[in-house]
Length: 350
Image 1 (tube, rainbow, N blue to C red):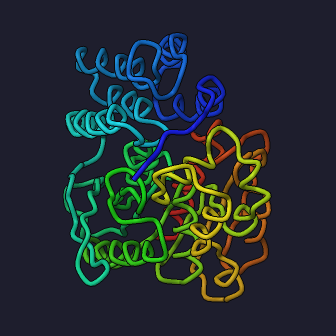
Image 2 (image 1 turned 135 degrees about the vertical axis):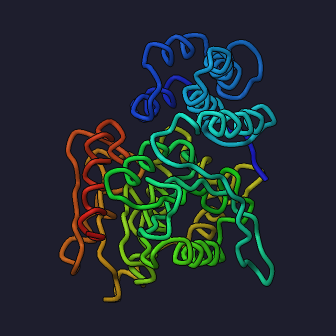
């Protein structure tokens, strides 16, 4: 289920441009494509998906498959609310797999059958490791947010694999990307199933790292103590899940969330509040069960309130960084944040 919603294309691009650039796309190419965009949803010249797909196709024709995958990731942004965006995601995966031989790490794509609601649910994953044999090193499961998914986190995955000497299992969390399971109270079952797979894949030690809403899930794994280490990069935890914050969300984020939670039309505020209730983490934060945790966000985040980062200050085995001069997930300072996270993981698993 999905739906289109009103959003200003120029404002959306302005907010996410630093993220797209730090993922690896040239600013000049992005800006040139964006100069023709007039709206987010139409599948014709001037449409977001049309113009960024054209950029991606040019990269593919030139044999630049990784650049093409990144550009298709922009094309399918921010939600899979129409057939053109779903097609862009399919092409993103195709181009990413074609690019894999050029990666500086070993790569494998698998579709896992994860226990779910009395049966199983398929979860496509990308496994990246410094060597082809992951059995001798820890494993990090890694997921992105409501609109930034596993291919978009390639820079993080490679940095973790190379710098922290871990194997990375990158996935789309429930409600997003290729994962068909719903983003609801049962999402934790998918996470726990992936943790079990990760323990069997590597040396038994597992970390959970998340970006944006994925950090709500990784933060919960850390607070529950079900992993050996956890990284929360920009996760909403408590204060961000209030009616007042949702009423003031910018750049289409309220409806990006609505899509991820499975609505097929713009939900009421009460409907959204009911959908996010399972992800409010006050109860977990009141416990003292956490594993070692790293919590990071930008001080100028317009989506996630500062309190959702600062609430971790003073907890045992927890390191907190609120980075000035940058916004959601510290996207404009992503290279230094990636280094921080990778070095922290290396120290935890030394």
